[in-house]
Amino acid sequence: MLLPVIAAVDGSAESLAAAEWAAREATRRNRQLKLLHAWSWHPRQEGEPATAAQRHLARRCLRQAEERVQRTCPGVRVEEEQVEGPATAALLHAADAADLLVLGSRGLSGFTGFVVGSVALGVVARAARPVVLVRAEETATDEHLPAADGHDSIRTPYRDVVLALDLNDPCDEVIEFAFEAARLRHARLRVVHAWQQPSAIALGPGDIGLVQEPQRAADEWLGFMTAVLHMWREKYPEVEVAETVTEGRAQSVLVRAASGASLLVVGRRVTDRPAGRRTGPVTHAAIHHVGCPVAVVPHA
Image (cartoon, helix red, strand yellow):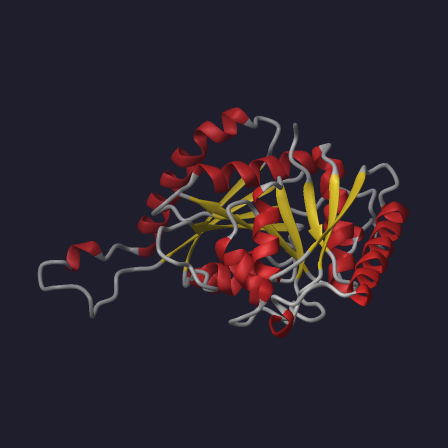
């Protein structure tokens, strides 16, 4: 049985945008869409039993999200579910049974932004399945290039999918997610890697040879990227791929590269250590500063 695309909804504009994005993605993937509402969104309420008012709010949130989804994606198959918190635990449990989990980037009672302690950041840092973050203003036309007359359109080609690729640790799960996302959209995949020269402070007297002329270093990184992507190009021959290596801090390079994209794909390493609510610096920069939807893909 195919796993569904799950969207967490809480009645906020952010979660409704996430539900709409999730419906489009479910349609692209030919999956069912599950709309999920958790009763205990706020940390102060965690552990309290659901009241009649909470159940009523849950039904209203789910109905509102379903109506929005059916207006924008009338062909999508929709299922609804209510669960009782704690919120982070409920969403992590739901993610285990999802093709991907979609969250609004801000919201009521828990989605108050990507700061330490937020529900969304806790889910991103610990989920075993891909999580996509969608901002409130996101619409279907944002995924597409503007029409020839400059107006928004859903009939034009998709904007690029951007993959942040760490060539020091290239991971199949992250690369495959990005290629598949580009294939589903008939979009170009732009693969980006940022590199930096070794710090002079960190180099010893015999290490000066590690410093390369920038163009030579860039060419070597690009050759490595081409080699890493070779098998994926063969697996996805229909996907146009643009390879880019840039000298600079990964966070800054990534934010610039994602400007105007339809989707940014980043990886997150799964470790045996308690992850808490922290993410790596690249993922942190993406979810704070990138305007397009961000897919965070866990990998071993």
